[in-house]
Length: 179
Image 1 (cartoon, rainbow, N blue to C red):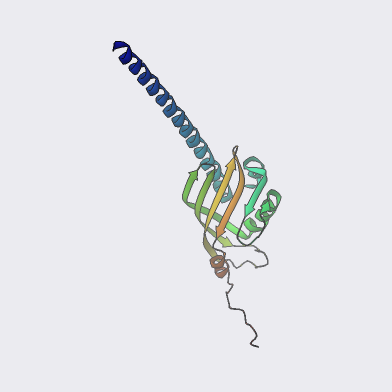
Image 2 (image 1 turned 120 degrees about the vertical axis):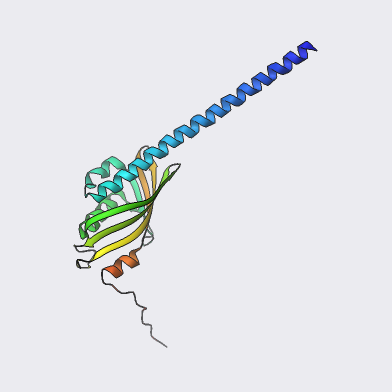
């Protein structure tokens, strides 16, 4: 009887020890993921803050992967790293005193979601729309995907309709011919 109790207690100790090791492994995995998520939040926050002070061009190489892809609803194919840099050269000069207010910044695994409000003055040509001097405000949601400390993809939804209206454009129904 004493041997059976000893064997049962030994098995119980082994099971408890194995369970503790599993809990430790899970906790280490969680800590590691939390650290990566925090790092990713800081990378995205830094990018947005540098755009606000017009100091972002030097950060492309530091923060973005050369394989970076930029997805927007108006393009069926994602834009490349070089395309994204070129877009920035057209967009940012058109909007003077550009500032983004981060409303929400959330990290989950290797993605960061940024919900922002942007404000600027339309002070330069914006894809053929001459400067109006109007104060602009629009909202945007961007999802950043990161790997090894670099942004590898970005999906973006911007209130372009509201932005264009603030620049004096009108949205009208197309006239169709009645047959």
